[in-house]
Length: 193
Image 1 (tube, one colour):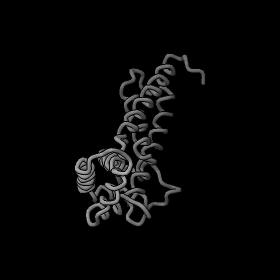
Image 2 (cartoon, helix red, strand yellow; image 1 turned 30 degrees about the horizontal axis):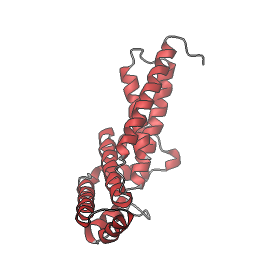
Image 3 (cartoon, one colour; image 1 turned 45 degrees about the vertical axis):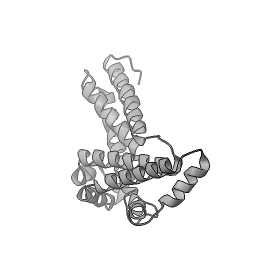
Image 4 (cartoon, one colour; image 1 turned 180 degrees about the vertical axis):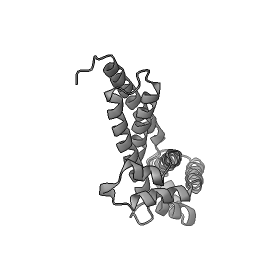
């Protein structure tokens, strides 16, 4: 969900920067939506990182790093199809290692900024609160790492090659195309408010 929200946010950014018509009314509205989307992406990103959550990337990391969940997963994959044992073991080991590598690439001081933001009164959290706690680059890096970790978990648990970055990129493209068309129509006075 953070990937989708971040993709939609990035799409609005792209539309505003690509539009030749600067700041008609619709661009101001797009900016408001953009701010809400980045807040949603930040909160969703932190929710899956929070060690106090019942399920989080931290708990999955602990399991992957210090336990052997792969025996169960490998057996499950072998039962689902005509996979060769060595192929399943290699694929699951590769996915586990890629998950661990992505997790260990997380900048925890940047996650701390998300935690400071989350610890504000969320009902009253503003875009300014977010901007003081987290940089866009930090949020983007975290969302991309989370997409990669989800991808590896999809490979492990479902045998699925679906990658959440595809959802992010799709949301970005749809959002960019939509808001670029709206801003252009508004500037051309062909948008009936």
